[in-house]
Image (tube, rainbow, N blue to C red; front, side, top):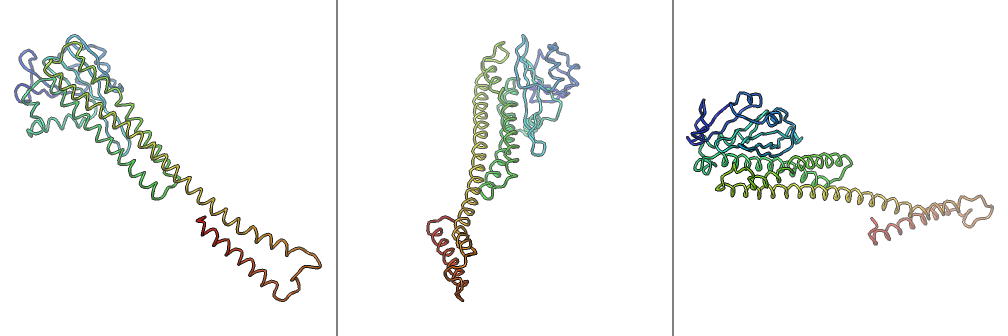
Length: 309
């Protein structure tokens, strides 16, 4: 467990007195019972579970939130859970797996960068704003990786469509649907924070969460755009495969059409009649062969002229 005194330039402290200052407490889920706060048992159970979707609950003295942070395991999108307790004098962030967003904020505070409002207005609400802001940026970056994979798949399809590319498209679509399912509840959290039912958030800082709500809306639009783009890539793949099939069928049609008169001539002159013109002529074989070549060449020129291949 790490305790930062927000009012004292985020100095790390061993003990805390919530009546005299503002604090940010970062702890592992297993340390939650060591925290000397009267928290609802249901919230503690949810913190231990770590299989919850994003949600927000209001209590008399605090707000409890479950947030999902996207991450990548190789190419597979996974979700890490971050639980937050926000009160007038403190904010508690509870994690089970390493959350890069929290580490980045702490590093920026120590390096005195990208956190000027946080240091100027040292309040738990502002810490929550920064966490949500970085979380949105993190989720957007993960979505950008999926978007890059979709763009690469589209380029490969347009260059040379292959049957195994459908597996890539199915994988990307599943990843996108997973992202949408994980992040969709965020929009309700943004609305709920603005509503501020229990008055935990000071009215002065409601504007911060209106900004967060706008960013969440933009994030959701990016998700929907990604879903539509993947649908268009799928359509492009199907169109390219269809075009290749049509081209192949066109070649088969041309070949069949050329051989049809040749087969007819072969069938006629292979009949076993006693009398047949040119049958006994010394140059009949070469004449028929020349005629067949002329027909084939003429039909090739015709098809070429009419752009049949």
